[in-house]
Image (cartoon, rainbow, N blue to C red; front, top):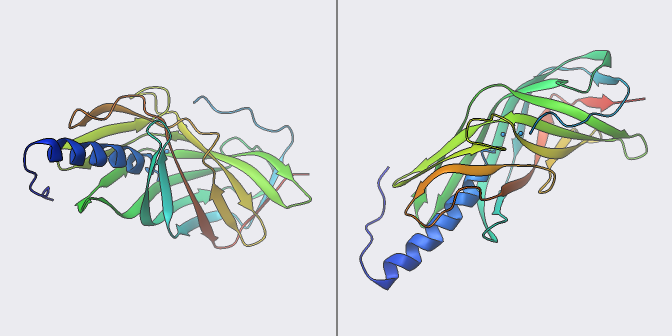
Length: 220
């Protein structure tokens, strides 16, 4: 991947500043995206049907650097994982996420690559029987981003903490998982992007995944 040729002068500073801010936002995607010590989970047990291997696909994904007040979009996002099945399950680690990817993320014609590593935990937090919606989180997120002349680590409370997290709502009707902009703790560390991006920038992303095969996650 090659960077577009950039000249000198005031125009350079402006372009690098715009690029740097946008890269921060795209990093959060890693999505596409990955969470602090495990959050307190709702009391009680959970039922998952049918469970097993799942895939999740989303369309346009919006990534926001809340520190810089900027956002960028990716064309799509996808995820792969598994859910436990049966009744009487603990909400902690009710499933695992093994990959989160984001597609066609670019800024000023420059492509950005995001990599997530490790096994992420899918946790059930609370359940609304009226709306048939479960509040959930994905935790243990760690990853990196790279582009021509730029790199950064994505995590929660530190570059090597492996505790990044995001919060979401799982809708049993339609088997859809919506990732929320609030409730997460993703930040950037080891930032090396033209000297215009700072460590500890807070980032988030939002999108809605269609989970297949269709699942139900409920709690009495």
